[in-house]
Amino acid sequence: MNTTDSAVRITHLPTGIVVAMQNEKSQLQNREAGMRVLRARILAHKQEQIDAENSAQRKSQIRTMDRSERIRTYNYPENRIADHRTGYKAYNLDQVMNGDLEPVIQSAIEMDEQARLDAIGD
Image 1 (cartoon, rainbow, N blue to C red):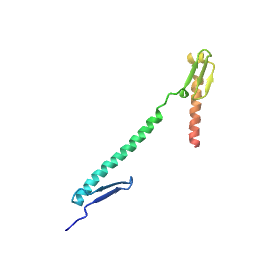
Image 2: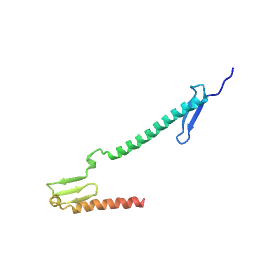
Image 3: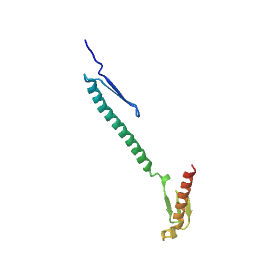
Image 4: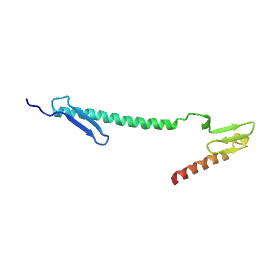
């Protein structure tokens, strides 16, 4: 009885994906079928990575809109404005509503500059 070794095992080294194929009688046919399966698995693996990255990016952009994530509070009875991101608080809400936005904008600019300096320092 003559037998031939026709089984094939293909390993993709960068990802570690292994495909073993022994369905056909010919080693060449098994290699071609194994390469098709390996290509499909590598593409699926890359797509999973892309989906995971996109999901993580979307989750980082979505906020829960908790009360703790407020941006600004306008308190008309006290004539007070508070920017919760920058820590700016003043009792000139009527002036801000009439267009005097310079102090609010300046506090946002200072916070942004400080964040950039902190990023450079790290």
